[in-house]
Length: 238
Image (cartoon, rainbow, N blue to C red):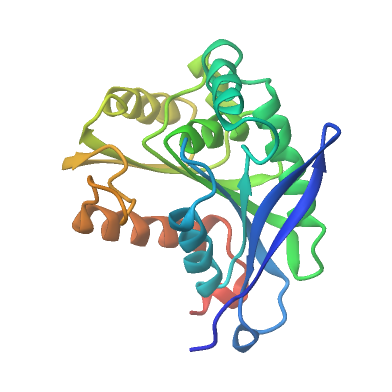
């Protein structure tokens, strides 16, 4: 199997240069244009686990950009600012603006279909993905994993379709149920699933809470959902 094409890149955001890992489908999948997905990391930053997820998406025919939201300044300070934004101003803070600039960069790549863009995020990244979907109409589908909801929750009436994966033994299970209900209310296409026996970060195969069965099922649901709401005709045929 031909490996995806990868490189570290930078893009401008509010006077800074953010780093990101770009993974493009291999040549045996055609020249595109491919649908694009922004990959949003947990509080651990852009690590090998997040890069692996970008590679897995590229292998499925998506152009994946895994952005490092902590690539400028002190990581602890960046993390504090990000979490403060999520709690106190979840729909308008620098983290979301950085993600919009990341999507700008991804959409401008010659091999990317700018009309088919989505996001996947984990923990902090999952929370960012949900809030971002309420504020950026370019997103066609998102896949949050164990994320928190934006405030006010009613903002999700502006969301794109959502496929969410949550562990039962976690503080995010309650928000997942609320998200499921409000997406029903606003008739937003969605697939929210809570996995019994799974704990926080169950998708991270390098972490102590890795849950193989839940991780496998969640990934298959994400791929199916993205094929329906995000992928182009060349992926629908796979």
